[in-house]
Length: 260
View 1 (tube, helix red, strand yellow):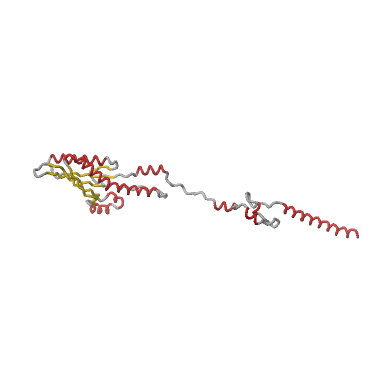
View 2 (cartoon, rainbow, N blue to C red):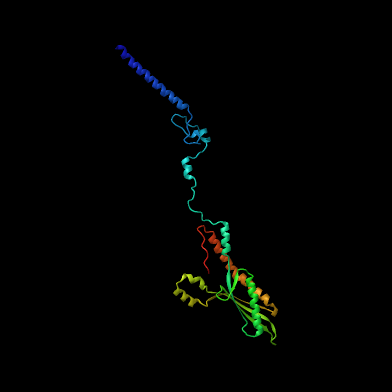
């Protein structure tokens, strides 16, 4: 009985020593183990715990800079879920070709007389001018309701003896009120009122005169059309192209120009 009382304290003491030894050697093993990086790819120098040694100033200065995975995921550009509506260069070229500038011209020539010789001159001048207008490539000659109206009055130049010395061409270039462009904006009744009010309204753009000998009619006609092309049509072309380019650079889409 006496021996049993002595054995139990010894057993308890031995168990305590064994447990203390296990804890001590476990701590020593953790201390010798290199620190575990907080995430794959990170430097071990970035990770410290209570059992690891603090970093020196040299280690802190030379350690690589890394970014946490969560920051990478949040800062990465996100793919757009919106459909790509930007037009390709080929689409732009096709639209430029489809919407290229064109206009219509109503040509009126008159000599103010029914004499046979002057009627021939009138027809000759009309033919010369029409040929030059068509050569521009973006002009169509119409019988009425043209976007431009060219009125040519052919005046003979005679001396006191009545001998024909040449001709003067008095040219008036105007733009009639564009009724067609307003047709879709009004109902039938309102458009009828506009039509009655605006019919015959024109904007006079130029009044020029050309003169020359009887055999200069073709040269005068060529000069007339060249002036019309430079002074009236070219500003229209430039404005038309400007509107197209502004529309093509709009990423939200392109709205074709309505018929004028």
